[in-house]
Length: 299
Ligand SMILES: Cc1cc2nc3c(=O)[nH]c(=O)nc-3n(C[C@H](O)[C@H](O)[C@H](O)COP(=O)(O)OP(=O)(O)OC[C@H]3O[C@@H](n4cnc5c(N)ncnc54)[C@H](O)[C@@H]3O)c2cc1C
Image (cartoon, rainbow, N blue to C red; front, side):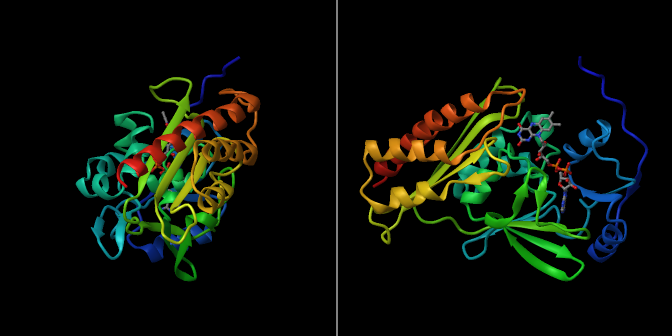
């Protein structure tokens, strides 16, 4: 029987004036404080009693949090508090990172995306996070302010388990950096949900590829999966396979099968593990076909 969720518990709202102040506070109150951006994960967890923090630090107003810049050297540098609608509306992001725009559009509704951030999606570390696959395949790197100073966290080694990342008490992500994408990159995200309105994915497949003279096939094609492993999962074997020999329909089928073999889904309210596995194969095949066709069209 569904239990009605209790209301938000009492907590202390803190708006720190500097990264140093925020980091020190989070470090000193490790078990009872957390930072938030849009709050779309944080307040739901607080309301449901899953998180019981005494202090929530609103870090949206810290310097640079709302900025985003693009240039041909650094690529995109996105302040952590930039919301998804701003990303979707940006001409530069549409031009250079259309895959990120496509992924962000699948997150819930316009209303939610006016609060939700890409960095929050990443830090929440849900295996179902819709924008994470795109950020992984775009070689995203987080810039983090922590007790020991500033450091970088490449996303390809950031996720430790459901809700678990390399972030430690006192760490605050300041920006997400996406390097300039390779020439001719084509990407696609397909989200299978129970409905099209506002649901987490049953399976999500992101594929990105581009011409690459260093590989035998002449292309580098990468694939990442959502909702079918404890962490957002890039299936490296797919890249190896599709780089090692000329690409044929049969090879794409084998790559889809490889994706299926690599995932380790669970049964939950959204779908069974068996259904998820089969959908990984079918959707991977479709998305690989789409990306491959687009790469051939531009050749
Ligand atoms: C109705 C509804 C529908 C949703 N649908 C989807 C969906 O379709 N797809 C999807 O992927 N998600 C969905 N979500 C989940 C959520 O909206 C996303 O994960 C969102 O991107 C989180 O961003 P945020 O800024 O709101 O994060 P917040 O709630 O502010 O933070 C999320 C996590 O990141 C941590 N954090 C925040 N800022 C920082 C920082 N600067 N440094 C370090 N850690 C930080 C927080 O402590 C928290 O653990 C949905 C949520 C709701 C309520």
